[in-house]
Image (cartoon, rainbow, N blue to C red; front, side, top):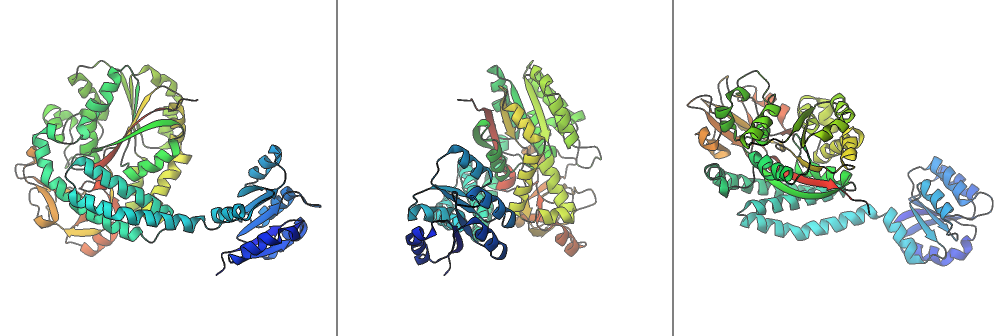
Length: 517
């Protein structure tokens, strides 16, 4: 077995014979050369897995050789080997993106570590990651079997997300096993919701923290503590997306992570309006009928968010000042950043960011976007790229320089829908694939969570005979008419509105700027 093809460039190469034998015994194919010119010529006609390069050589120096080899083989890792400990030489080498830096005299173990870091890192990471997941597999399975509380489910979801991210990064073939365990967990989670949801609606004291509690429990106490709050609601921000975002901003903020549970349906019209109003959807409809828009109306369903925030302040007799901003494109975020200084006069600033939700819907409608985000990992990657390269990154940078309490959350998540369930409804039935409401719904009750009395679930009921049904796991609703076309069009798209950990277990993040030491 060949562990890698190496090139070692050193004008005293004969003195390194023992090291070369050491590497050859470990199945490395080692080519040696004594000067930079010959090394460059060799690189023109051969590809190497790693190059060991002496810094001090007659003729072309190591740094000069490094630069020319990088032009020929830009991706090949180069380890600089030198007697010099001068900082300037180190800086130049590192600036030219060397893979590692070794000081002579080097011992074999140092070289071996450099090879493992640069040639075998991926396979070692994969091996260790897979071993870690195998150890946790049984633990997660036992948690799924014994779950009986919201905290249990957040722990299960955190563990599954942790391993999904690590196995994806390791490019592991165990992802399929994890997906099967995740499916098992979602099936059990649906039973947990079906068993408890209606009781929660009757007794608020017994339920987990939910959408309508966010302002009352998170924002108002912070304002009472004389802290200014910047609340960022990123539509459709799943927990795994948050973990990607956290990696990007953790150097700027002290982060406290929590979760809450989205109400049903896990759709913006219901869950985000509940956040801003502090009320359940049925309560909004009763108390503020002019601010609630029914499913069958053409009017936009989330046009009254600022007004709903105002109603919540008025009900709690609060006199704090606030601003509200909705970000749908780069122009809107640019305007917000331009006005950033003005926002300091408000006690609370609320910003809604729609990018991830827009991406989710674009993926459904656009073949090109679907190809770009053809799996969970690619979907996360696009989200990460958006954060890095949009002006949202600048917004976080500005916030890290101020004494705001920054609260990041969302209204719901989404799940990749795979399994079609047949449903029959009249022409007034809503179009969402993960939940339906209507008068004459025909479906298999064993496949859904049904609510026949919407008011008991704090949901509006356009008609006396209206009922709601929710898809669970990764299923979605499809009509018998044009069934095959409908299924092929929507299968493997990201949807929300139903019951799953991805849709209902919501990141709730509190951050303060990281103090410089």
